[in-house]
Image 1 (cartoon, chains in turn cyan, red):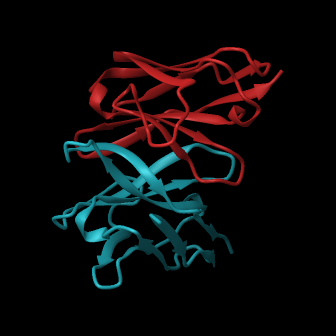
Image 2: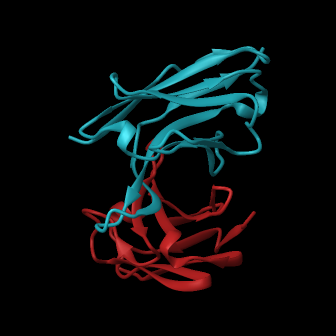
Length: 123
Length: 109
């Protein structure tokens, strides 16, 4: 079964750090584009970061310089290292896979999502 | 950055009725990179439509997507009880960057 399972969320003080993990099963993380998307309480969805199969990484302006996306190929796991956390980073964080057309080209829609992990930044 | 504006904010309908949801972009979007999601309370979003009009795996054919350029539509032909949820449109553009609309809530009238 194709599945993503996040972990690592919790309560952290402003200025603190947290590392989120996203374990994949049923497919290979390193062969796909993988992303993090977050959702503040009662709000909409916000894209956070992506790592391409070739290793290139990109970030939303709101997290650039503070968050780092990475993966561990042998563990088939995606990570998000979050530093210098702020109250506005409070959200449910989802990992998601970028989907492909049957041709193999990416369609840039998120076809598989994890269940999400809650991050609360508060003193 | 391309901004997606969804309307209406809330749609109050009865089961069996037709739902038409709009997503308007601040500038032209590639149809290949326009998607729709459904999200129920406490759950992750679920992909419904990609490429503006292609249904994702397992999505019933009462869901359909259309549009091009700056105007896109998600139509639910006959609402089932399980369709009452929040719907988001999403586009992919250069940078790279993904952006989402603010969502449309479909509620039971």
